Length: 536
Image (tube, rainbow, N blue to C red; front, side, top):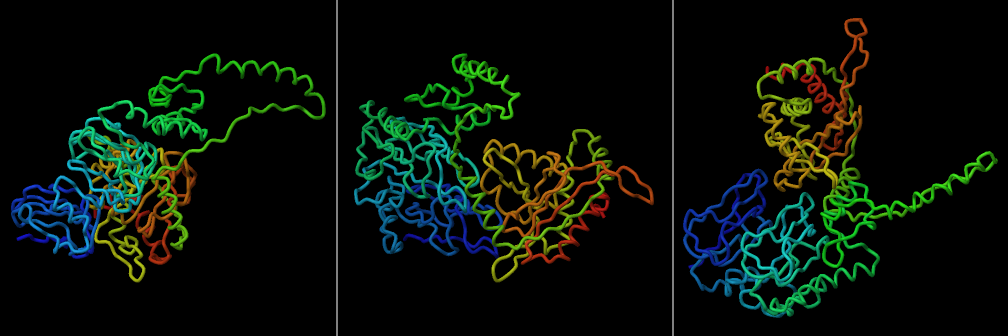
């Protein structure tokens, strides 16, 4: 008899869980003790084991999706067993149980057409808990290409990172539902995979992008991208891949001067990397020089003639990361009553301590590592600063998880150091370097940017002496760190050279009162001015 498996309560504060990964697919044999899925709670990701034997007949929560505790996670029973009575109100999954070859008809386009045997409808995955839509940064497979399980279909840009999306099926890519560089809502049709030559036109009616064609005839396959490019051309846009556009922007290259080598003249990465300005393109600027020179003698007149170079405004479509940054920071600034506290710290002893630590073999820490450690220890002494506003209550976090702001080409991400107060200088240093490196190469996982209880933003390396930041909600505070500057200070009645660093603490007044924030800063200042005090 079929058994309904519900979303388990894996922590005392858990109200809903997220399926980080399924280890079993529909139709798979399941044995007692097998790991069914990885469940992400509000505190950690845990393996969830099956307690019964049978076949996986139904999946109630898609990978990357979340559901309330005690809601249906999956159903296990005998092969071919009728489970319609157990999933009342979910007819789409009913079809899944009857036809194991189809992963989930709920992922199919809104159409009454039946899905052909062996055809799989792939939907835009939910790759983070806050993701509502995804953008196809790059397709790794084209319509008509053979696809094997484990092959990377595309790079999907979420609101937090760009992640590789792998195929779980073998077959041929019959249809692309989202053009490269475009976005679509979660659960909308991303692609269709099936046997070569399968007619899937009934599943794609009303969807104008990259319509599928029988693979046996390769001509229509190559024509599909042309229709997209032609549409772009008539709108005056230049056909260029997102990566190529990004590199061109970084190098300051005018994309209108680049000859594309991709399909239908599309500009790709290698075109930008190999680009060299030709004499023909430089000539007009050189020819203009005599004209400017001829005007110079008239400079003695009361109204001198000034020559300007003409240009055009350009536009860059917002990335998902940029859109979410704009949305969240706006919400934070306008919903949380910010106020700011500032303090100067004498870093002379911290400088000496760092020099002594870095003299040890295979050890190298930064001032930022020391600040993160001192902040974590100070937060343990001031739990109200390590809290969050939750409408009708304040949540006091048991763990100290510090988010460290990292600049990336698309904006800003905040990887999180879990249980920072228990980490050593070396552990903090290694973790920050690793996460910052992967953040810039878009290699961070979504769960590595979740769960912060406090944030730090450091612009000292850019010579910025003091600045204020917007709180990264649901945190109630963020620390802004400036540069260490040599300046005259008074010590023991004498003027000496001091090494001064300014700290600015932005606080949410709903949670942190002024005196509470000030006491936290005084503790942090004491730790940084005497690093050994953190050890007692």
